[in-house]
Image (cartoon, rainbow, N blue to C red; front, side, top):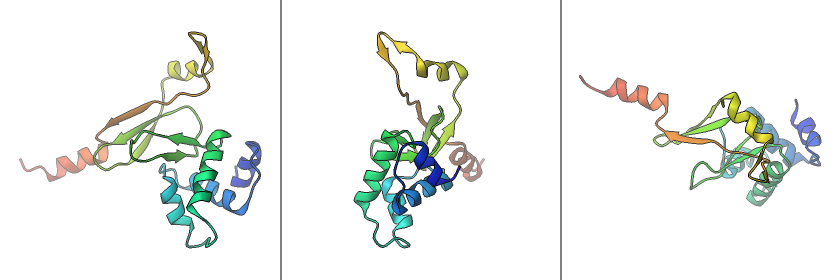
Length: 142
């Protein structure tokens, strides 16, 4: 799906900035922050402001076109993949990885819990990623 179509699918009026931001999210599944997106797009879009990026990402999140991740206390990150999945934050390198959820967790999404209607869930895991662990093994002297 193209960014323009994705915006329309989520009842978001496409603009040049919105299309560019959605395209960046879709092409860079690295869970960027608003600052990351602004830094990447501003050289080619001189009229783009940080406020526009923040407001656009908030709109995307509210309309279900992107997920807002608060896995890191210092940053808010965004994910164009809105399917039900978990996220893992490496406490060493700061990279955020997508993890698949067990089917049982996915089924809770549409449940009513203790009289509450669940509309979204977030599963966050933190630790040391396999890449950092591999680097540790390579640098360890036996």
